[in-house]
Every structure is written in structure tokens, then in C-alpha cells.
Length: 410
View 1 (cartoon, rainbow, N blue to C red):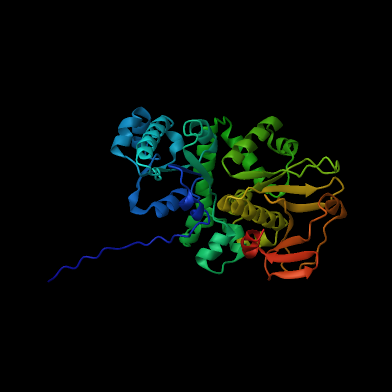
View 2 (cartoon, one colour; view 1 turned 180 degrees about the vertical axis):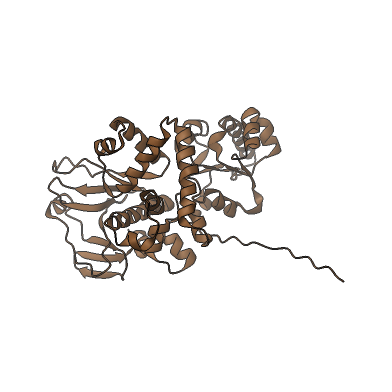
């Protein structure tokens, strides 16, 4: 009897990332991709590099010990081109990388050849990366920021998807490439491992339980004006400590502060920033929601949709390398525009997030806004659903999945 043997080939779906073109056109010998854990950094670089780059992760304790103890020996065993994952753990390696890059530059100058990409690196701790890498590799490295999947990336990679599903799951690649995973369990594990353990330890936070409490309170306030004293009162933690922890979460690309637009021409503008989580799935899980339907009917749905719109704009700016400014515009009298985009050309775009599942009414730019920006043409309403529609001469409605294409026209 002939014995048959079978090899089971597991195909992992890959969702293309919008930042890829920036990485492929970069000519720096060192490329560094930073962003939160499990957002797809190493998967992206491995897909980009193919078999030409070896891959080493410093989550492997043995590799980490060797690179820290003898970086020269490590790079003799793993010479470039190489992909190094979570390099914030091996600061002694950077001076050795600098030496290799400088030697390659000298050698290639003699032959009038450009230095190729030698090192691709990822890091999930922005504070440690800034501390250990930037000075060592100044002038030799290009830096890129990546976060979880954008609405545009999910829709392009998977076809038509539900905005409500993205709101609930967030943009974590594994939750989209493996739909058998439970978002609740996956994000519970992520919060325990990547946030409550790694961020707390790397930042030297002493009160882990209090940090977790503040994290939940911040999630409940996503899309709202940030009041440190209010959070301090509800958590029993000093306001200065809450502010420090928000800074830690911001450096880790978990949350983002949207600063208000400031103008000497108008003293009526508020100075209080808004806080947003950069992934709605994470905020939803920290709020304690277990199912999508009750969430969408809750009072928090509007702030979460505004959070999703904000994260889509931020991810577009990062992925496309735009040097845009984004602000909150709000007067002390309560006039407000959710997002004020100022492009490098000076063009100003006003956007509002509208969760309404039914008809969306036309909006107008406030007179005080037009006084500051007389060339502003219209306000853009980013909607939960529906179709792109010119609601009036001054108001355009765009469904969230089409926001990326609209921003490309600015």
C-alpha cells in the first residue's frame, strides 16, 4: 500500500497598507517603522522585504541578550540586509549599525553607487525609540509611523465592509484576517499584555491598577474635551499624574490630543484639547461593550464615530506623509467644527462627523469661522452611511469609506 503524505499549506491573508509606497521609495539605508503592538509593522516590512531580508525579533530573549552584550558579534551572525523587530530593547546595537552604514557609504562613494536599504526596524515604544535611536542614527534613518488598519485599507483589502463592524472591532489586522477570533477576547489579551504590562513597565508607572482605571475613564471620554481634574476626581489620582499618563499613552500611539486652533485675531477660541483613541475597537473594549447592537444605540455611539473619523484623518496623514495640521475649532460660545485641516498649500478644510443613521441636514460655516478663514468654501460632513451628496452650495456629505479619496484631492 502506498503511503501518501500531505503538507498543509496555511495561507495568511495580507491586507495591503497605504504607507507601502512611501517605504518603497525611501532611499535611506535604515528604515524605522514605529507604532503600537500588533498593528502590523513586522508583517508589513516582511511582506515588503520578501526573502531578501532575514528577520530577527527581540521579543526573543536570547537574541536580545546577545545583541545587548555583543552587538558586533550579533551583526556578524545576522548581517544586512536584515529586518529587526522591536529594536527599542537593544540600544547598544545602534552604534554598531551606524558604523556599518558609514562604512557602506564610504565604500560606495568610491564606486559612485547609492547605499541600498540595509536595515528595516520596528519599534512599539516611541519614548525608548526617541531616547535610544534618533541620536545614534541621525542622518542615516527615515522614520515612519503606522497604526492599526484604516477604514480605507480594510475596505480596499476586503471589499465592502460595515462601518459599524469597524467601529466595534477597530483596525487590528488579526481581527480582520482571521474572522474566527473573538474581538472581546483578543482585545482583552491585548490590553493586559501590550498596554497594562509593557507600557506600564517601560514607562516606570508604579500604580498599575490606578493606571488601568484611568485608561478606562479616558476611553469613556474619547471624542470629548479633556478635563484632567475631572478624571483625577473620578480616579482618586492627582491631576498632574493623570496628565503624565496621558502623555505616555500619546507617545505609545494609543491616544491622541487634538489641539484647538489658536489665533491672535480671535480670543474667543477655547484652549482645551479633545482626547481621541486612535483605535475605536480598543476604546469600545475598555468601555466594556460586549456586543455591537447595544453600542450603536447608546449615547456613546456619536463620540465613538467622531473618534473613528479622527483616526481615519490621522492615519491618512501618516500613511501619505502629509505635512498637514489638524485642529479643533471651538469658540467659548459653543460654536464648533470637529476638524480643521490646514494643508501645506494653506488651503483650509472644515469637517464634521455626523453619526445620524437617517437623513443628514445641511450645515453652514459659522460667521466667526468665516471671519478667520474668508476663503473657506464649504463644510464637509463625514457620515456613517449613505452616499456622497452636495447637500447645499456650502455643504458636502461624504460617507466615511470615501473620506480617503476626498482627502487625496486636497
